[in-house]
Image 1: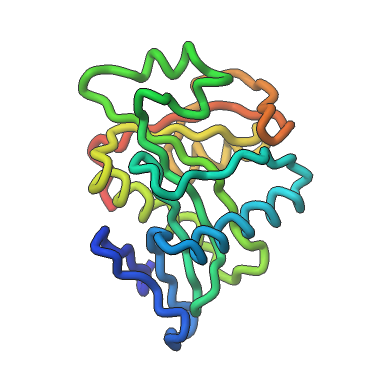
Image 2: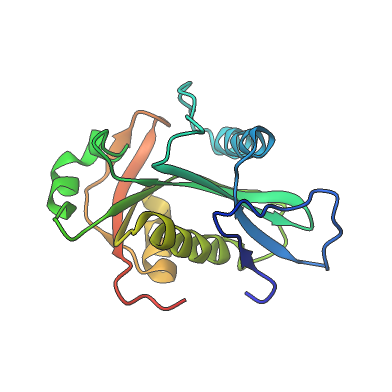
Length: 195
């Protein structure tokens, strides 16, 4: 999307007092406490609206295997997601899909899981989610060396993720206890993905 930006790890962040051009979208990693808090508040609000239960576990901001990205439009947070690199602690998807995740773990692969995805329903940009995912792919590949991405989604949204983002379903429908809702596991390789 024209006007979209992803900021590098050097710490360039949105200036919340800055005036943006209309519909200017800025995607950047959340690094301050206030930015993380805003992202968490958006996740809680959107999950509650959907009727999803939120676990009380707090996200560890300083964890080098997690990056929370925010999408700011005209200085307002309109979407967020967390990209988590696979580590010795594993990924959240391992809880429901241990067998499927084990098959993805190969010496030449670096897995990343997208979690805590939330989009403000009042956002006027129909391309917002695509911009957020493109930016997260770039960021995860550049910072984490990611080769593959997984995400657990509600089955009613799986077709959209397959069509718009190139995911494939690799797990059957199960109940995710973190949100008390049905989920399916989706996967995509970042291989020769062009941005």
